[in-house]
Length: 100
Image (cartoon, rainbow, N blue to C red):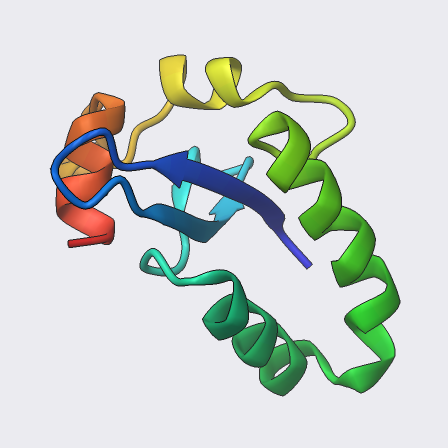
C-alpha cells in the first residue's frame, strides 16, 4: 500500500482530504477522499487482510499529515511533481487538481 497523506482545505469548506501518494512518482495516485471513502477504496483494492496496516497508516497520517516513517508531509509537498508533465504544484494547487 502507498503512503497516505492528509490535506486540509483552508478555503471555505475546511474539508480534510486523504490521498494515496506515490513517493517514487512524487504525486498522488488517487483523488482526494474522505476517511471513509479511503478505507473503502483500500479494502477493495488491497483486500481485507491489509486493513491492520491501513489502520496504523491512517492514524499516523491523521496525526502527522503523512503515513510514511521516512518522509514528512512538508518534504512530499516541497518535492512533488504532481502537475502536468511533472511540474511542481503548491498544496493549494494539489487540492484544486486532485480534490475539488
